[in-house]
Image 1 (cartoon, helix red, strand yellow):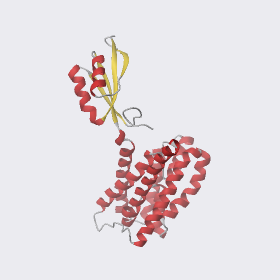
Image 2: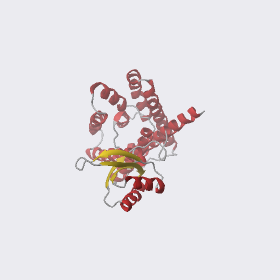
Image 3: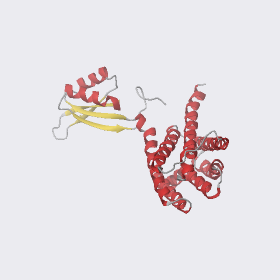
Image 4: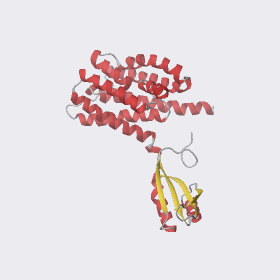
Length: 287
């Protein structure tokens, strides 16, 4: 039972993310003739050029990539990818049906395309961020990128950017240069929101504190913030003196309090603060 509950905790958010992404495509992006990257972008381009339904083209274009990825990447990595892609196609078909029935009326801008670009980027980014956060993808270029990254050593970001540039470039045959430039705004906003949902919402701060009062600082942190503390042995290169480095990870909202605790005990303490984008364990999140 616990195993099934754990699987549902992954599956349901992926499906929710694809629903949000599909809504953004049909409500903001396509009615205003903006573009998207990846295989979904090819589907959008075919919709503009030939009127083919996005729900069908995204699924058909991904089928050969499923087979390639299944053989190369293994079935475990592909399961959530297939789930995300099929779920996306299903929600796209559902929203297309709602639009035909008049239950959803896509938002078409009469002039302020920047507003559309911002809302489209936010919606698409939120949907994809949720999907990626829970281990899924929407297939397409992600599969090719993983394969080429393994075999050729290119970064996934470089490969995805290369293919997206080609797809968005081809869209110039069907949409204006102005719309392509607004598409870049969509891509930028979406990428920032994806990063925030994947990392920012769970980000924390790691403190490395060098002080002659390390024991007192560690005790104060444990008692006042109820955070775990690690004392690491160190040696000053110039002085040659042995010291203890206090290492502690806290939430962003606790950063000011921790600084205050340290400064109160030792105003001359040396503090290094690093961003931490994912934390697993007691006091943070469990997987």
